[in-house]
Image (cartoon, rainbow, N blue to C red; front, side, top):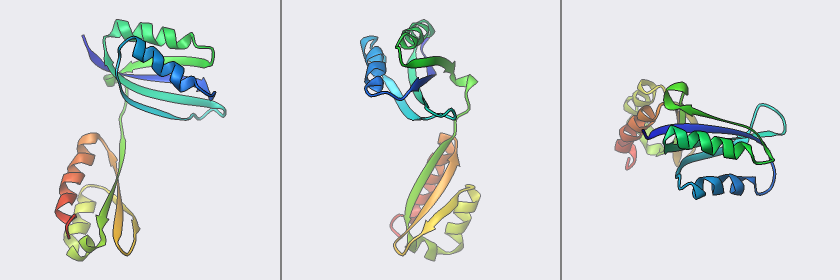
Length: 147
């Protein structure tokens, strides 16, 4: 059964490692849905977070092969039910939307978003939540795009 999996890979940060990891996916004909690389909470250790759709047996073999790379410290995979997702979305809206007064402010409050900055020409709004929540605020702000 094809499901969505999140793969976490902990590595040292060496030149060319990302290429060696992605080649493993390419050879197995597995498409990467998303990829994030960042420093982890352990100094000198980086975390690769990849989301793929595949069958569990393929994912198990894939993770074992990734762990064979010399610079990889450990790799794990999770199904969606075992992870918590949060997204952060930033919206840039014309400052004229503020002239709409309470409607715009109410919209931000109702969606539990916040204004990061107010410049002379635009406002940056931050929304954290699940994808559906960020998309809902995006749809709601479209009414203010031309304001």
